[in-house]
Amino acid sequence: MSISYENSIGRVIEDITLKSDLSNVKVIAKHNIEEMKIGSFTLEQKDKETKFDIPRWVSSILVDKGLVDFVDTGIEIEVLTAVHKEKLLGNLQLSPLRDDFYPKVKLLLNDWKAKFVTNPDLKIEYDKISMSCYDLMNIRISKLISLASLSHPPDDLSKKITPEEHILFNKTRKDIQEWRHSMFGE
Image (tube, rainbow, N blue to C red; front, side, top):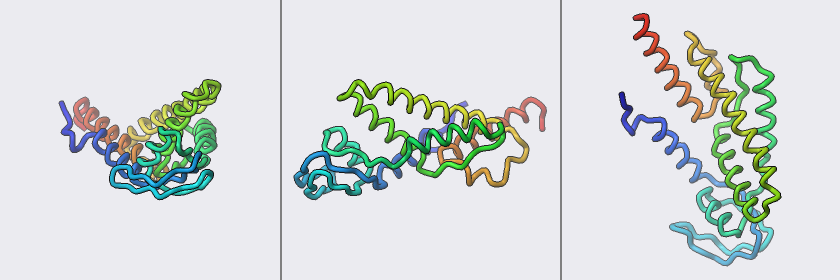
């Protein structure tokens, strides 16, 4: 059994990632930056310590070149708070996450990786935040699987899950329903 690429989870996640890459993020210039062209994007001259918004895909290039840093969006605290909430809630309860949660977490982890390359002392901090992110993801996956197996999931579920989780939930729910039907003819 195979799923066509157009309907695959990977394809939908690519679409979500593309949308995220095109959205703006706030960065701060680490040095004076001369006007430059990156692909079709023209970055105007920026002075050191200037905060500005640019597309996420451009920011990734500038971070890799050491020209900018991401302005802290508080996502680290959001991850730690979400892990704590998920552990307190029951197996069939989810705390809400904002739609751009996972793209921001991915950006955070990539930013930490870039930082600890130049400062190995930051590896411990990276490992801590990375572990918290994976803990949160695993807790939520487990809960989503449990919720997908219910005959009637909670009405407010779509308000509490991200687009990526919505895809996982729908696919898992469909697979569980097909499996039940093949086992019991229900």
